[in-house]
Length: 151
Image (cartoon, rainbow, N blue to C red; front, side):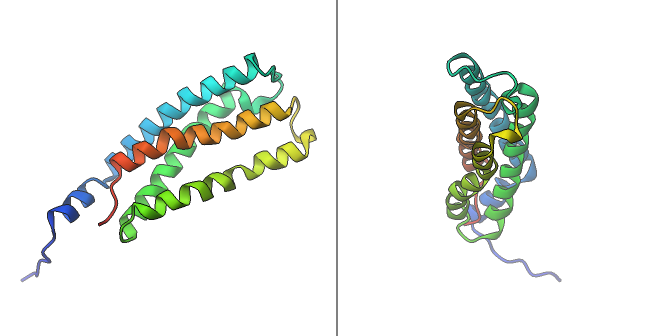
């Protein structure tokens, strides 16, 4: 005989809304939005701020996979935290600025030592930093909507 623990409808809904397929959908939506946002940022950097084409981090070959990886990593992290922490919607939102700040460290180092990357300009690095915000801006709303936290 197995004992069942009664759960509330809210708990059942949260567990169902935290499934891996929903997480994959959130990652996909975040990635699609990030690609659009980051493409606009790259075109703006090249067109308005005259960032040279030698600055490869603003090439589609660099930012497209990075945008997808960022959105996917964020979705997995959100899913894992939302399922393990009580009232799991607060912690991911608190971690977003921390993770975002940590993700900017390589860009700050690039700005400090421009010899690391040909074509590095201040405008180019600032646009690259803006791309990190673009991934977050596109992804976090999708995570919040599709990956519900444990009550």
